Image 1 (cartoon, rainbow, N blue to C red):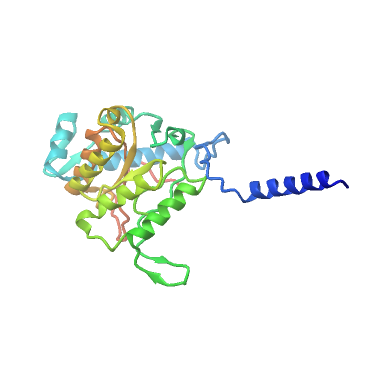
Image 2 (cartoon, helix red, strand yellow):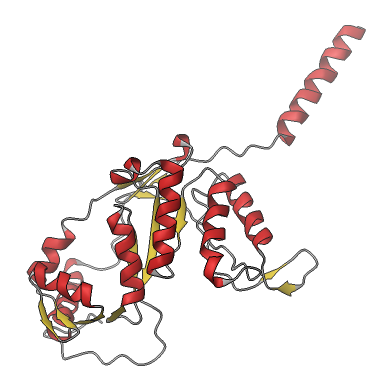
Length: 278
């Protein structure tokens, strides 16, 4: 074997090894699910659940501990008695139809923008961990530096499409400014889509101001750049804290995910016109 041939082979091996060891952090595209839908219930069962849900909204109602929300519901045509709002099923269906079937989330890096809705899904890291276990196998309270590291890892993982917000809770900063630090960390250490804090109306407004600085005030008018997550106090109760935060996002045309809070106690349901599925 000639010296030139041996050198060429050695160079090729080195090139292949370098390629294997190279860090590849290009984000994978959002999930476009093309598999056939798996129907776990037939249409009769779906209709029963829908009828029971509408019966609760129409006859039990939902409590809104917020004067602005109560006035909004009156203007929308709902029946309001004190703090309880009774929602006609026709009104509910009309409002649901105003929700766009798909949302385009615009990341700081346009190449990492993703779609959500319909058959489009994204992968997001979990949030709100009160503790972490470090490489020394010690369970401890997280810090802002720990959160920054998780945001960096989320940025590097190709299968994640977002850095969320407080993957862990940074206890080394006071609550009054913690939402600012968390949001800044999401913006600084990744150019992927992120979530915004909705822990209070003021905090949500601060997040919207930070988004306006990052993307531009006008851009927020017709582009989704973040999303909020608002939880009810219980399945049928909403208070002014979450509703105020929700309004802060809605004023800037930013999407909000709504979910009922986890409830451990028994829930007494009213008599239902149709039986639940077996």
